[in-house]
Each structure stands twice: as structure tokens, then as C-alpha cells.
Amino acid sequence: MKKRGFFKLYSMLCLLSVFGYSYWATSWTASQLPALSNWKSHLIFTPRTVVASKDIYEIDMFLYALKVVPLMASVCLLSLLMMIGIGIYYVKKQLSYVGEKKITSS
Image 1 (cartoon, rainbow, N blue to C red):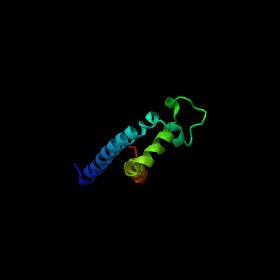
Image 2 (spheres, one colour):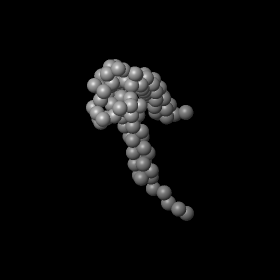
Image 3 (tube, rainbow, N blue to C red):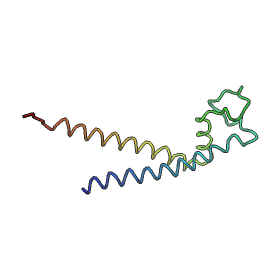
Image 4 (tube, helix red, strand yellow):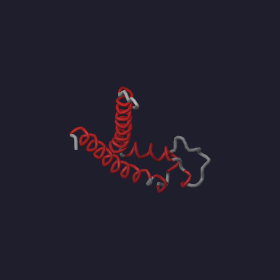
């Protein structure tokens, strides 16, 4: 296996594992919001007319987790953005390589 191919695979696997753990920790913290007695005071995007705590929007749960555990939620968001950015970079690089290659049919 080429050294570059191993580095690409290793970096994506590391980012995937960091994202997986941080997403799990963030979503666990966010799931605690409906159990709070004053859950309506933490709502930003969910309408105030909601009566059941099961109807809280996911973005409000994520913002609650960002407020409670900012480091883990930030790591989750940054690792997701890095995976998307690296994926786009690799695809762009492969497409430019294919575009430069002159293929002639015989």
C-alpha cells in the first residue's frame, strides 16, 4: 500500500472515531434536556407553544449541549467539518487528475 493512501485512510479513520465519540457524548448530553423541569427556558428555535418535551427541535438540543459541554460539542462540529473538507479535497484532487489524463481510444 502506498504511503499516501495509508495516510489518507488513517486520517479519515481517526477523524471518524473522534467524530463518533464526540457525537455520542454530545447527543447523550442533549438528550438530558427533556428531563429538565425548566426545559422551556432553554428553547431558542422551538416554539414556546410546545407542551410536550418530546417535540423539542434537534437544533435546540444541540445548542443546549453546546452550552453544557462546549468542548465536546465543538470537537464534534469541527471533526465533522474536517471530514467533509478532506473528503471534498480528495475528490477534487482525483477529478483534476482524471481531467489531466489524456485517454485515447485505439
